Image (cartoon, rainbow, N blue to C red; front, side, top):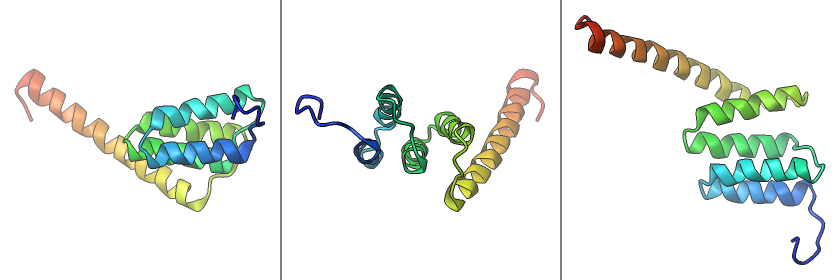
Length: 112
């Protein structure tokens, strides 16, 4: 688009982010969100949601949660799907933390 001197907008960025998500390219999706800000365009609910989906599909939970936090900072309301996803991820993190602590106890002390 730059080479053709076509001006980017939220729709074109969101389409690119969606293509990255479909191709399991979470890093490129995040890069496009950053490029969007550099172009003085604020990501919208669609951009954030698609970026979160790209990260979630690749099990990049920290990045997905960071985007969810950015979405809230921008005062954008997550849709119901994202709210349910956020709750599942929070539960997953709690289970993983408990599991990690149990494994450290077994490995470090010989006790279960």
